[in-house]
Each structure stands twice: as structure tokens, then as C-alpha cells.
Image (tube, rainbow, N blue to C red; front, top):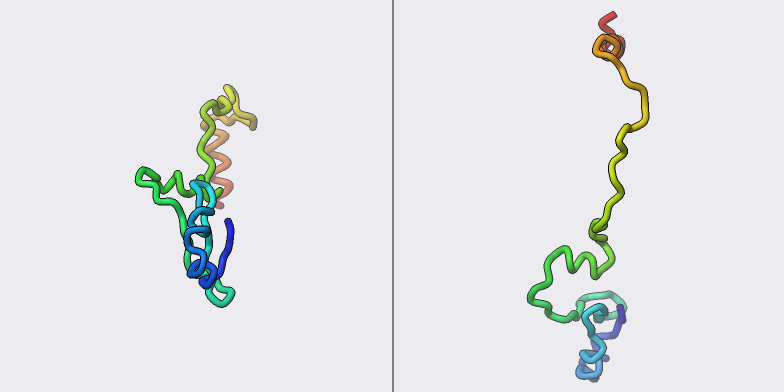
Length: 92
């Protein structure tokens, strides 16, 4: 993202607008403070497309990793689970 001054935009408008592309905006500063952003108008751009362009969103993979058949960790019977819950509640 390129940064220019308000004066540069005023004096070289056509050259500045030529620098604006689909993937690169131009930020206009006033007294060193960013004030405006010039970007290409995209009629069909969705919020997710804009966030992806800005690098704030990554779409999910088209081929995600499969879930494991048997997740790790111990297995408990109903009675064992009830005993653990009773112990956590302090009902013993």
C-alpha cells in the first residue's frame, strides 16, 4: 500500500490514480496522518473478498484433513463418568 500526501494528490492526480490497482490501494496523508484511502471500485466484491485482499482472512481449505476415527484419550463407562462428576461437584 503506497502512501502519498494530500498536496501530491492535488498536483498529480492522474499519476496517483494510475498507481491504484485491484490489489494495491493508495493512502492519502494530511500532515503525516493517514486520512483517506483510494481503492478500485469492485461492484461484486463481498466483505470476505475484501478481507482476503487485505490479508485479514484466509478461506478454508478445499480439501481439509479428515477427522480421526478414534480420537485419543481415555474412555469411561457411564458409572465411571458419574463418579467423576460427583467428585468434581463435591457431592461425596
